[in-house]
Image (cartoon, rainbow, N blue to C red; front, side, top):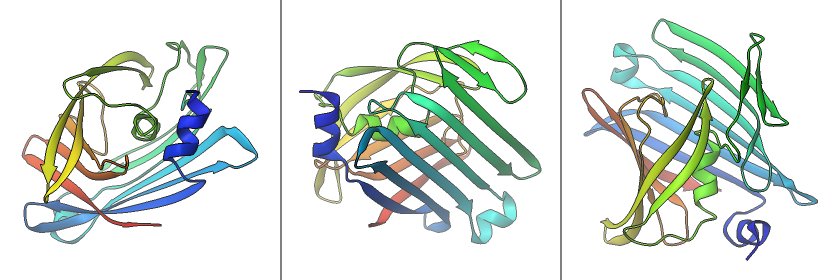
Length: 213
């Protein structure tokens, strides 16, 4: 089956996912994911991710990040932009990928691995794949001027009585959703990401799906 047909089967034209983020029983903030594609141009996918801490957690370590991704029908990155505000650390980065090269706004040009995804559109590309319990998926990734082949382990786990697919990408050295130590992705049987676990040195943050529009 073609990639475009898989996308048509698993992803809507537009979608907004809102997650409440918790550290144990403490409310920590929210993550919002927005996806859209042009119904007349299936070779265009747009994703925006916004992350923000709130409450007590925000007083300790304030995070207000956003990411934007434009990719083709197979979620191969064409343009990626991120704006990071975490504590006193801030950065803004734009990368344009064309003809196998990533062109950064600081003037650097880097060769890109074939089929490279970014950390945000990786979430959606996985929704178009067939999962097999015990399998390992290899994902080409380009992030921060580095090319990586991410090994992602697939298993099955029960979440609140529902059977979910658990995907654990080995993201050592890649910062994902504010964390640098690990990411666990739980997908429903209909391929909707219902839970994200983000590992920090001091434990896990859990992002639970609250609404889907």
